[in-house]
Amino acid sequence: FLIGLLGALWLLGSGHGEQQPPETAAQRCFCQVSGYLDDCTCDVETIDRFNNYRLFPRLQKLLESDYFRYYKVNLKRPCPFWNDISQCGRRDCAVKPCQSDEVPVGIKSASYKYSEEANNLIEECEQAERLGAVDESLSEETQKAVLQWTKHDDSSDNFCEADDIQSPDAEYVDLLLNPERYTGYKGPDAWKIWNVIYEENCFKPQTIKRPLNPLASGQGKSEENTFYSWLEGLCVEKRAFYRLISGLHASINVHLSARYLLQETWLEKKWGHNITEFQQRFDGILTEGEGPRRLKNLYFLYLIELRALSKVLPFFERPDFQLFTGNKIQDEENKMLLLEILHEIKSFPLHFDENSFFAGDKKEAHKLKEDFRLHFRNISRIMDCVGCFKCRLWGKLQTQGLGTALKILFSEKLIANMPESGPSYEFHLTRQEIVSLFNAFGRISTSVKELENFRNLLQNIH
Ligand SMILES: *[C@@H]1O[C@H](CO)[C@@H](O)[C@H](O)[C@H]1NC(C)=O
Ligand SMILES: *[C@@H]1O[C@H](CO)[C@@H](O)[C@H](O)[C@H]1NC(C)=O
Image (tube, rainbow, N blue to C red; front, side):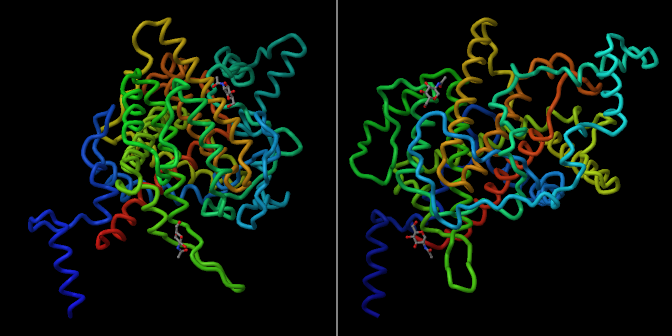
């Protein structure tokens, strides 16, 4: 009883003499994460409802399909920036590639970009071209379209280094069998990667340090303020770049906290939510204010990818576009589900307005966009330096997905040639880009859903 009484007195005392209940752990992580987000006119609550109830369940179903679960990736590319990568020896870091007979033939055969019919046309056309003549029997329009498909050189639109998936080292990975979760890869090695990403690639003056590990003492408040006042002084695009990276970082940490290795016996492993881990990364007090900012950036990233998906709808609506695996019925059902999801996304009322980006002076805007692209490419290459294969896999996939989203948002081809209805054949996405785009968005969608779970788990903790 005495202990209870003392506890009650202490609680009263810590409430600054008022009758206020003390802040819960949930409030410390989420109190700033509500209402309107900076740099856009959208609020967190609308996103939560939209994502958790309308989008998330359907997206999960889509990502379980054959088309989306097999991702081809070269995990053996050497790190281009330094060579002392300590490979993480943990079993949870390992990635199990597919046996060659597991992957549907329709996915493996590189020629199937479009329908079988379209591919035959492409072959005919290529042959005709080699012979120096274009097949007269094709309508002029078809000839033009077909040549576009084969020749599309959109490398200047790409935000990621094209992964060499033709390399003999590239392998198919079943994403469902290699889920993103806690691997034990953390500490100095993981910090080094994020450090390089933030330090070298975020348009930041060298002299200003990001408050790195907020748990470490000695990170004075003033230093942090300098950091954010620097950020405030940036143009909206450069600030956005930083926020996207920070959002990606936050999202990955939400996954690792939600799929933490809680228990391991020789019989089984148990994965689940680790509240302490979550708080260490997002609690406003423990992170000296950084945590809630990170969560806001996660929502910002969500909005950017959501907008890209709504914009690319006409590309997927083209009648000849297929999610080709070779299983006709399943492929058609999949495309229907995909379009349903994209229409739902399009109906979202508070889309981000990317027209505010790279507006301004044309020459200036062009240079800025080019800068943006180069910086982002660098980040996709840094992923080859991640010592843990599982983390490298998901890091590559998520950066490629974000890169694809940026390519969509800022592609002039898409803007110029894709009016809301009519299909355009100049804009092109590879299967690789499509798979990464949707899986990356699926990851952020999962994070937003997991935030609801953490909010509930932290509700009654002080
Ligand atoms: C949860 O995470 C914390 C800190 O990251 C760790 O010390 C703790 O052992 C974890 N809890 C469980 C049940 O694994
Ligand atoms: C790319 O990253 C490397 C290594 O971090 C760095 O030296 C280089 O300056 C970066 N380039 C750009 C354009 O960010």
